[in-house]
Length: 89
Image: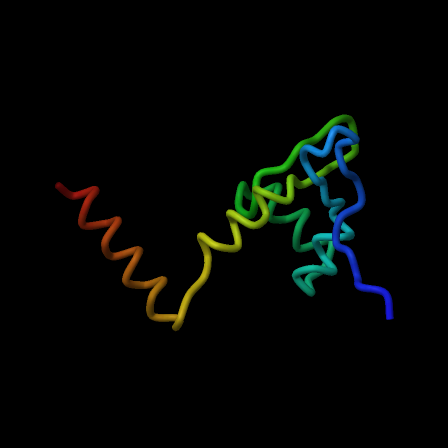
């Protein structure tokens, strides 16, 4: 069985690996519409846009994944409270 690859483009010099929205939606088991809304609302990983084309740098996707790892749903609430406390100071 062939290993599924989640990227579509690689810099020929061995540099960046780029994911299309379709590839990212498969990786995250989400819809293209969700990714589109995230781009519109300014959430989600950083992306590159040229004309109508959108590409995601694999390193930015992995950074976003790591930044959003949680052990429980309460961790998110704790982070928000910490940020609010820091803003008040």
